[in-house]
Length: 308
Image (cartoon, rainbow, N blue to C red):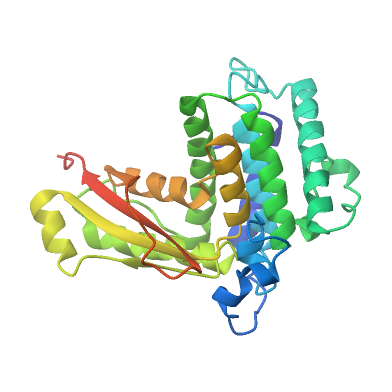
């Protein structure tokens, strides 16, 4: 899906820039002790929403990826009928609505920067004044704070669960579009092509790590995964991430609004949909047996009909 409205050329240009010359995340020193980094003595308070990653200096987010995600989120929010930022007939962006939203996001972003001790935001480029400079967004703290501001502002208008789910799906489709260009992943449309699905998912998660969205990630498949899937056309697996860059804002958005960005989750859903497979997180999965420095999700796949 390509975004409509005034952001179309911006997003296409950014996607092409990454596809032609994607920069790996900045080199990082050996991982620090996650338990120590997230302990109360290293945080402002024991419940500080940035506590988990109080020393987030292991990596920077690829600045072009960061800029793309900020613009993809903006475009997806503008497209919602309740926001009214895009004319459904012409696909044109309503600049008055867009500017009002940008103003609200900027207020929230400035508040978060102050809370985090990030200082005053850098001046914005007059040609692209809706968004912070790419150089600024590559900071994990700034990227996370700006994402929080965008989704907190959206939540003020989008109060229903269905609308919020649809918003995150639209963003996920845009991120998948980008990562497909980076990795060359193309779904086959065949739900029985299990090995191809596994390889595609590996490539997708590798791209998330390369751009600095996570420090590391991995999958845990059942030992007899291929045989079980072939027999039942269903399968459960686990997906873990180490220090996803939006974890602090996601935790805060869940606490305040009951929803969060779900960037990687909705991207994964979109990938499997390209094979005719429904992929969903299990809401009753308890990840407490995993180390504290990892976010763990359990997923269930359900295959659709095999194409004739």
